[in-house]
Image (cartoon, rainbow, N blue to C red; front, side):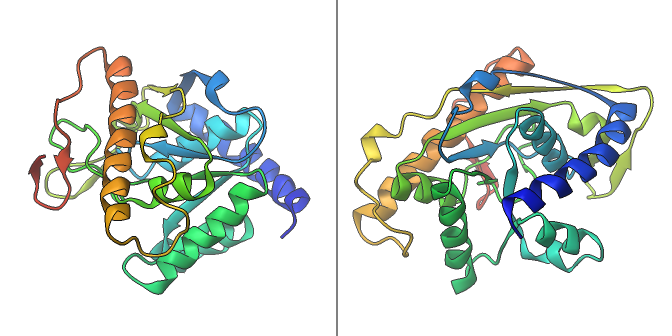
Length: 248
């Protein structure tokens, strides 16, 4: 699908989604000046609830950016949602397979054509008991270091007041009264210490793997700082380890 077609479809979807979203949430953001005026860039948000991608997409769209998400492949099998994702150029990811690398290749092509790609490094809703970002997968860092393009941290808070998932995993929905959803966009993450360590999207070897882990940690800590500013408190000194279920 061409970019012109993409924009037309986004315009139609926004005309449907935005009024519905505004019925249940007041969306406000700061820091939009950190979106690069030209060239591709990577957006890295925290992940609180299934509503998050809609919040992020609306902020990007209202700032003239057509969002492309790296999304779980299982979402593309959901009726109607899957066809919408494909029609708007979203990229399916099958982690742990050759298709995961293919997704990064597709994302790189979008970035190098001047587009914006949204990556959730956590890969799932945060398991941190206090809802702070967890440690992340290295895809966003790999894209950034291989392309030399900026990574923009984006934190949001309030989505969980609309749609939440309790300890049992059961979802709860609260539509009224309207909730405040706030977004804070930070300055691009300084990845200078790791520039030159990763030159392609192939599976990293040797020092590349260590560089990717360190760069990913820097990215997730940048997201945590933006979230701390939104919440008016300090972020934990250590990230929640998504693999072991505790602080790193």
